[in-house]
Image 1 (cartoon, rainbow, N blue to C red):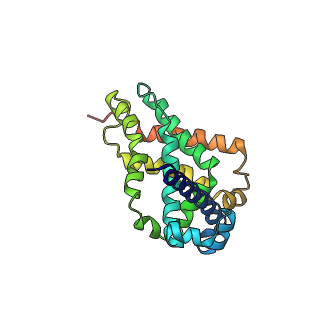
Image 2: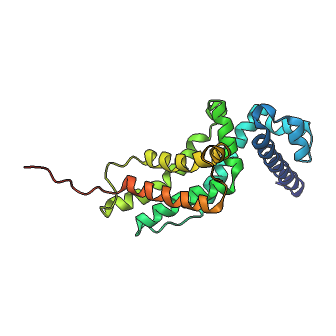
Image 3: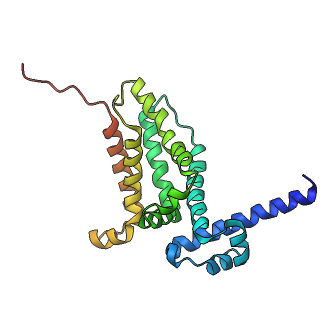
Length: 219
């Protein structure tokens, strides 16, 4: 590759990244139906032609937005180094990672909500979702297996169930924060409320996988 080709490839990568970032902003704010190509190109300081050149269609652009949001989550998660000698604490920290990521990245929650409204239409078109989900769920596996080896965690734990438990407890609070605030009469955006919920769900997850004490039976 000559120098000019390398520069063009780098510029193309920057343009695509800028469009993806803009698309996430627009889709998270306006939804899939409301997120218009001209709004995305304006946000990206680009033009409609470049979006169609790199992504071919609005639908394919959203597929790549979905993949990108999961990839960003996985990259953040890959930086973690859980201490497997202390599986309970490692699992507690894993719950905290999920929770803090959802809080700090409302666009992630918004994109997932939009895709569920469309019944996973775009996720089904992706060739990357299997790899991305395996990576996310796979991070939990060594923590659970370490706890099982120590006799702390149940042997019948399903890794997918643990992931679903963590993800749902973190997602529901954030995706329904505004309606729940009115319904419960508590500001769920309040930092104190959020920390209380994190402590509560951490205990729930730990108790859900712990080995249960033997129950005495009548002879």
